[in-house]
Amino acid sequence: MISVNNLTKVYKLTASKMKELRTTENTKIAVNKLSFEAKPGEIYGLLGPNGAGKTTTLRCIATILKPTEGSVRVNGFDTVKEGEKVRGSIAFLTNEIKLDAHFTTDYMFRFFGRIHGMTEEQIDKRRDELFTRFDIHSFAGKKIEELSTGMKQRAAIAVTLVHDPEVVIFDEPTSGLDILTARTVTDYLKELKEAGKTVVVSTHIMSEAEKLCDRIGIIINGKKVIEGTLADIYEQTHTDDLEDAFFELYKENGGDVK
Ligand SMILES: Nc1ncnc2c1ncn2[C@@H]1O[C@H](COP(=O)(O)OP(=O)(O)OP(=O)(O)O)[C@@H](O)[C@H]1O
Ligand SMILES: [Mg+2]
Image 1 (spheres, helix red, strand yellow):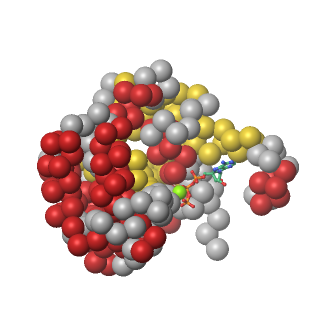
Image 2 (cartoon, rainbow, N blue to C red):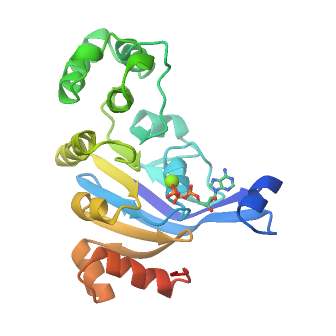
């Protein structure tokens, strides 16, 4: 269970960032009073254009960033006051996760399993499950630097999920992956949901949100502009297509449609 309550995150901008964003303001409100809940047994999708605040939100949930205002609870634990407990019950995945190139998947898996306080037997059992699920056995003993991008991604996913967390947060789950690996990942997210886990993903890909998510929250400029199942969103926007709904909402909420 994840509950995000009035989350606001303001970044202080460096001079170079101000230039990049073409602004004279020295702060940027990345997330603006955002609230939503993701429940066990569902995949909740944060859908929004580049710069909408998706990654910032997920980093706040994962305790990597501290909210400027508002709060986030994961399984009842406050991400600021009880960060360690939150970290014990989540996996935070992104495509930027890099495992140390000099080690093997096997070594990293065992290393993180021990960090999470697992016994060798527990690690072995989990290793068998995940390495089979992601077809890792054949390269588990090879150094990470020798693996292809898809293999590295699968290895990173297995290592991050070693402790069988209740909550899985995935920033852009299929970005950079070929369709086979992407499908393996999205199928696995569906299995996690079936197993009663809470899954939150971010994406800017409409078709991915449509296929994968039980409920979607669309965020534009750090604000949630709509939320619900696909059917709810179609009804509220008088459309029958997520892309059309998105453009409607984007225009209504001050986005430039070129
Ligand atoms: N460390 C930072 N310092 C300053 N501004 C930042 C920082 N990180 C993000 N931002 C700004 O905050 C806003 C939200 O960024 P964020 O990365 O959360 O968006 P996103 O929805 O994940 O976008 P994308 O689809 O491109 O990944 C953007 O305007 C971005 O430029
Ligand atoms: Mg992002």
